[in-house]
Amino acid sequence: MAFSGVKNDRGELRILENLDELRTDLADYIAELSEAAVKERGVFAVALSGGSLIGLMGKLCEAPYNKTVDWGKWYIFWADERVVAKSHSDSNYKLAKDGLLSKQVPIVPSHVHSINDSVSAEEAADEYTFVIRQLVKSRMVSVSDISDCPKFDLILLGMGPDGHVASLFPNHAVLDEKDEWVTFITDSPKPPPERITFTLPVINSASNVAIVVTGETKAEAVHLAIDNIGPDSQSVPARLVQPTKGKLVWFLDKPAASKLDSLQFSE
Image (cartoon, rainbow, N blue to C red; front, side):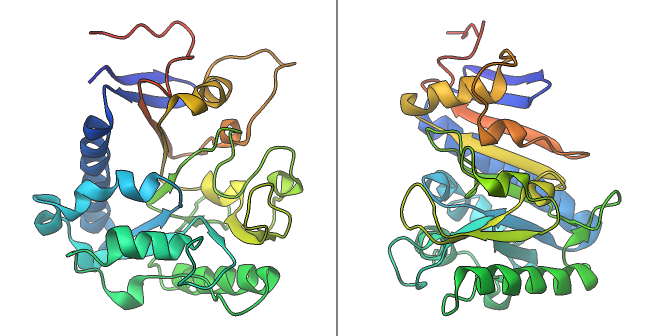
């Protein structure tokens, strides 16, 4: 491990030597949060994203995690989703199904909450909000004690080279959404254009948020999201992820962390 547990006002930084170490550290982190949530609440409510994240979670499907994690207590959601058929190659659900859910892990199918892929983006966002509200009422998902937002045990996010997280893109109006839990966009700057996404108030109400970033192409966005940049510098959506009472952890490989200010790696 290159660097672990570095903390600043942008959360805890875990900078790993290589992708294998990152996968192991991420699996340990998720397994520990799952165990703690199940012990405290009897369930583990986790929201996933797409991109490379699912592949980086792959060690959870291997020993010892495939036997030690209490998969039957997991409730799975998506922090963002593309409004396409579940069988479409752009679907985050399909990505997770192929890379995680269909592996030999006994997740209860009725605990997997994907969007309705047969309606418009707006309707899909509204329906997903309703589903989450029902699960908040039944306490499968906790509720924030400082707002009415759901409080997920863990929200797992990737980040794009432009600093976007979930489907919250730079300079987009959805960054200012304060009332909705789930909103929609029809003009995503990267295809497909129609998506649903958790809003910042929901992301920032989570007990734990992890942002997982790898690769040198994202190093500048990591710098803008984490370092103390001047007020005139470009801001990126990932910088707006600031859990109100929860914990933020960044999982970075060395290339992604290469432009962080004053970070000296131990060899």
